[in-house]
Amino acid sequence: MTDRSELESTVQTIYKARQDNDIDALMAFFDPACSFRIVGSDRLGSMTQTVDDSESLRIAMTRFMDNWDFSKLKTTSLHVDGDTVFAHRSGQVRFIPSDVWNNTEFIDKFTFKDGLVVDLAEFIDTLQVAETMGLVKS
Image 1 (cartoon, rainbow, N blue to C red):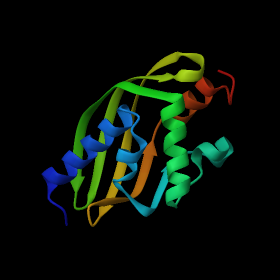
Image 2 (cartoon, rainbow, N blue to C red):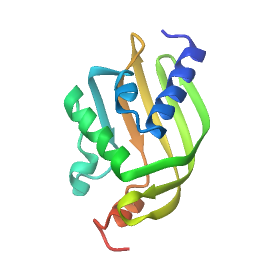
Image 3 (cartoon, rainbow, N blue to C red):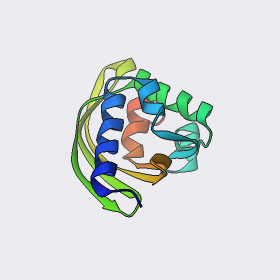
Image 4 (cartoon, rainbow, N blue to C red):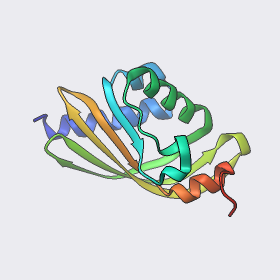
């Protein structure tokens, strides 16, 4: 099991790399076989499909950086249970293509092994995201 303060620091550094749009710094924290998913209905298509290899993860993270501005999000709390970190985030996000801002909050669940993220699940308001992206009508 990794030290609690080390895990908390790593998660905050991951968020900093994401905010800075530094894909190489971000990817350095993920195991090559890391599994990533946004938890939600399969009806939302690729948005909620699991990716589980380094190349697919890099593509997914790059798309997030290209389309979503997380600069006004703050980490509200971090909870550590063994090698799992639950991060509660809140604030505003911007969908860059249409310059739409939304107030939101979500939970990220990071699972670590040997200092790297091996699983990341994001619990977000998928309806809000789908409406913002124009996938469903509001």
